[in-house]
Image (cartoon, rainbow, N blue to C red; front, top):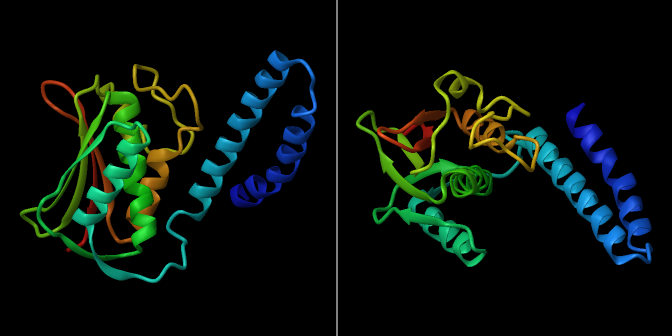
Length: 201
């Protein structure tokens, strides 16, 4: 239902955009187009959530450390404060594009709410593959940690999502679970936040 609604909204949103661009008053046109862009962003996020974990992308063995370095380099070029700390190869069988989407969501989340994120890729003592994005931001109220990955949930503190539907972590969690893994969210001590994609080794 989420996919169908989001997909069907694309047509009226496009029609509204075309009409908005015909408005002669520049200030009114820009205000309306900004609202249309927000609608488009929310629709695309909802579509991403509906598709998350259901991709038909072929699984292959890839180096997640290399993906992290490439992804963070691309984000930096876009002005997003994301740094990779992944010097050693860490191989994992996955849907590369799907997992890269989840990694991007975590990096953008850390940059937006924590001022910048560091992405580490490593194997845990249990031989699980871990992609961890940490920041030095304000963290999240302890009673909200368990709700953060719920679709459409917005924390009410400094990490609240002023723009967007609150779907980034939900998408990352769906992708992790589709790979037999999990998303682990926790506050750091004394300050900061950590988001981990933990995948079977």
